[in-house]
Each structure stands twice: as structure tokens, then as C-alpha cells.
Image 1 (spheres, rainbow, N blue to C red):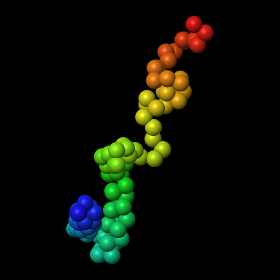
Image 2: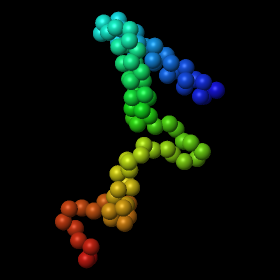
Image 3: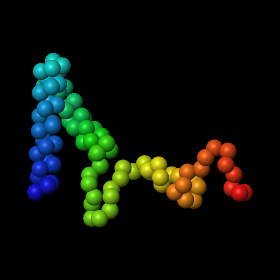
Image 4: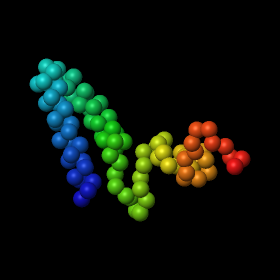
Length: 91
């Protein structure tokens, strides 16, 4: 059911882009069609990058290539604590 809902939303987005491009920007029919064909996957991709889907099978899904600030600090310092500028490890 969720897949059918997503497909219908993508189709509605495609129709919306066709109308906006053909009426609002006065593009020809073919130009509006190919413009909408290019814009829909880009819009869906950006939507999933900004608002990732909720938890999938118990694990939180994240966009590839991005780590949280806490994960980066843990990798650099070896803990979740943040180092201050000028502090040394020899204390």
C-alpha cells in the first residue's frame, strides 16, 4: 500500500511540473514533458536527503556520506567528549 501511495505522489508531482513548466514558463509540450521528467527524480532525491525516511527495521537510515557531529568527534577523540582548543593529552 505504501508503494502505491508513493507512486501516485510521484505521478502527481510529474503532472504538477508539466503544468507549471508549460503554463507558467510557457514551455512547449515536449520541453515541459522532458523538464518534468528530469525534475521529478531530482526532487525525490532532495526530499529524501533533507527528510530521510523514518526507522527501517529498527535501524535509523541516514543519507550516505554524512555522519553526525557526535560520530565525527568520537572518531577523532576516541570518546564522545569534545576537546577544547589548547588542551593537551599529557595531563
